[in-house]
Length: 126
Image 1 (cartoon, rainbow, N blue to C red):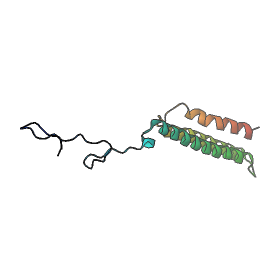
Image 2: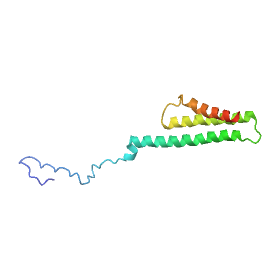
Image 3: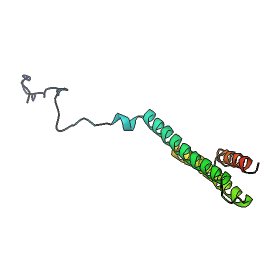
């Protein structure tokens, strides 16, 4: 109840709620600015995709290097390892597209396969 006197015949009006006090009937909504911030989400996507692509690129390069240093080299096994390295390059591009929620059917997958394959074949078949 209010301490403010009311005119005759009217009920007393309630006090204005004080903003600095907690109201148990109407708690303030809690928010986490880090989860709601679009910029933070974008940074997380770029960090994650760069880590994934770098890791898979190292795997692809490792397969190509393994093809170069086979103990008993046969052309078919060297080319096979280079092609597997190219497939991993394409998987790296696909994973980056998936992290950024882009369509997986993109022309970027083709260079992801062709670049490691071409470099690997140039190194193995020289």
